[in-house]
Image 1 (cartoon, helix red, strand yellow):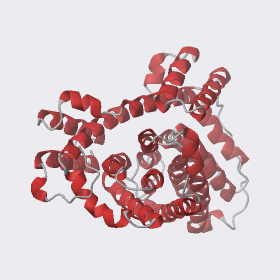
Image 2 (tube, rainbow, N blue to C red):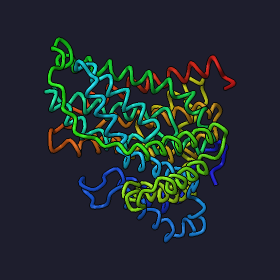
Image 3 (cartoon, rainbow, N blue to C red):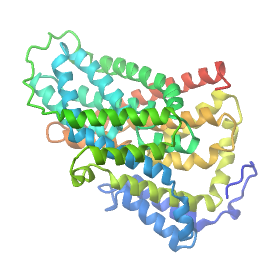
Image 4 (cartoon, one colour):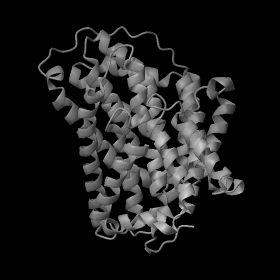
Length: 429
């Protein structure tokens, strides 16, 4: 098991078989299919987990124990609830209302950023991008607007907005369950980061695309919105169940138990065919999580995690601000090397060894998410938007990255500053 001391392990003390399996697994996750491998990230993680067990690094029983079933059950329950919102056409209706309300290109940008950002906090950023991308394409075409600013607005705001809640993205769910945050605690600390981040996102996009957004006439060609038939009965049930899960979380019920309860409840009262729900549940993500837990268990048993602590020690033994900068910088790099969920799992064993772990966990959650805006391949939400938009417009790696990097750096510095200020003025929180 990982020791909490700072004794330096020498390379000779490391077990290289699990380290090798870990490195190969993470390289395959980073490369993914289409960039040199036929394995996607889920298949790579699953093969790595099996290799850890076959090599005797992790026993089969230990592999079962290594999986955080609370995290898996939490994600599954939320996915089932979100699937019912999708079936009720809630997201379609919201997206089309944005296009109708906007009077200028800039207003359309602002409405899109804040609507997609706030919805992403409660309905998962990937889901919001999946549902909104076709609407953005149709709306920009009918309003005779350039697609690039609004597609970038969608993906960057969905990532930023998802920072504020444990339901915003998978890495937040992992942090919330691991660090034992309540729903309101997480929201209280990171909602200011997300909301100010969305405002900063608008400012950056408005500056970069100022020629397309400013000094242009008001929108004249109003879109003729297609008929979006909202299932009002199902939507009402979804809203009631969502309110229930929020109440349960506020009352400090287990994240996993509350999510599973409302997932089961909406399956019963929603009266939707189960197969229609299953098609919208991301079982690949659940398998990815389960496999990564096993891979990380094997990596921890190698002694490498303890060995890595010495590289974190100088930054994490300083002031709170220094600690936040150190862990945030690490997360920005790791999240773009191996993706945000594996990055969180990688640093998870290290944080328990340091003081101010409460704020460090918040920094891990926020910066691992904000790092997703850096490049087109930094988050699944980005890939969803780019893949869905490809039939209408091509967004090059550079077109995305020149905006994404600026948004990532600016919002990450904002997150660090806000958390450092909170830790300084309210150290007892």
